[in-house]
Length: 624
Image 1: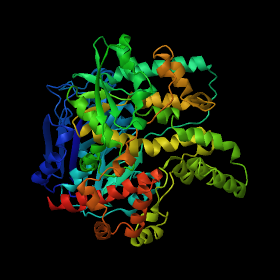
Image 2: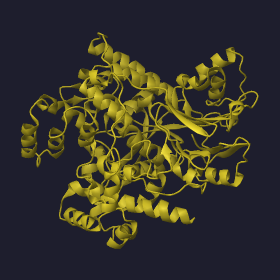
Image 3: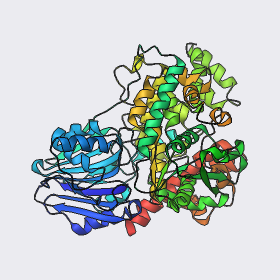
Image 4: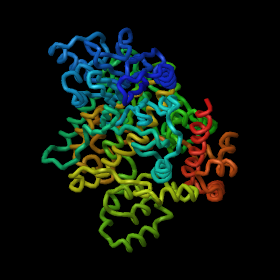
């Protein structure tokens, strides 16, 4: 695992500023404290900070092909590297290291950009093709590893994190108001946007080519949920799913350093840990997170897997408390784009504990997306029979139930077809609204072609998919990369910890896309087929346990006395200084929340995060 960065100039002979490249690389030190490496040649500079996981002795990067014409820096792991290496050696290629990522340069020699189709793993990479004066940037299929770029001043700058690009001092710092609108409608920032107009995220399953001063973006993979004529019994699907899970866990255990796991009381992480225990004889270090507030503490819902001696686990527990809102500046510094959930703070506590004992952890993230495990999948399914009612009648029904079931009512009165508006109504935190934005920001949004929130570019066959699958597609394109994986990567890498996600092996994800929706959710029970697959793997009380998502105790943090920095940032003086918010509307928001309206917690936290973002990235960082 690493942090990568660099620059390619439009003018092929233009020298690279070495001091600038070193500054970019140093900004990513937390992602790879074990070593640094550089490649500098006319027109191009690549930098990397390395966290040594595979081939500790000889696996430093950059890595080149046999004649040095192709040079690579890569953040991630290629889990099928042994199979690829054998095939490439048989084809005449010579390897200098045992590094998993060396296979990429030799695959590129044989297949060009099609080499990406052969890779099984998580990765963000930059490859310099000297004969073509071409830079290739690519990101894995599900977006597990991040990559950002900026096209400015006749050059392409890139980095695992935005701070590497900001370290060039060649990027204008200007808030992207559409990213701000995303936060107050979806609770996140949608790719390719970031909070800075000059920096974009490379989308998952895409690659960018930069040559002759021009950048072109290409998609190389997509999920397909088209109905298939496969006639399998539920037991056959369950057996095949367990086989796929076993293979994914086996591949994700590849490491030259100790591997641990994050464990909660829930199904997903328990499944990963149980399968790990079947494939190793050593005791597995597991790391759990508790909460000071009982209503957030999943561990109090029943026995966890480490309580069962047959799994050979050791347990290490961290606790999230009211004082941990003090971690907000550090969390946002690493996360860069605000998330209304603030889920990176609990994950940072878990990461800090894990990093004291291991360099790698396996986690259960991704299962809810590929099996439809969130509560809004149930809401969408339950409301489908009512979608054919006239809109006027739906509005009356929605108004009648708004106090008891606000999310369902909000969805019910919206459009019935799966598009961006319905998705936002299903998934966005309640009471996140653009009404808190200043008049100036709202005017800028009103003048934009899409009103600040554009829909996805959907596959041609999307209309023929089952509604459950349509919602899954939106999940894998939006919340998965732009909230779940972003939070996981930043929280873990803040402590130089590699987090792996076996549920997001793309072969497993493709297999799960074939499973009929009726087996993913039977009635209103989520993850039915996963529970069936794990019947003989997990204790029954865990295999059948209802989902409780990881949530930060935002309402408790905001009700406790605020740290001085937070109180100052929410003052009317500071709100007027930044100009992003209507200070009067925010004052009403705080009053209503203080009077007991808990549903406003995410809205208030989002205001605080944007104010803090401005302080960290528009003021403090620009003054360094």
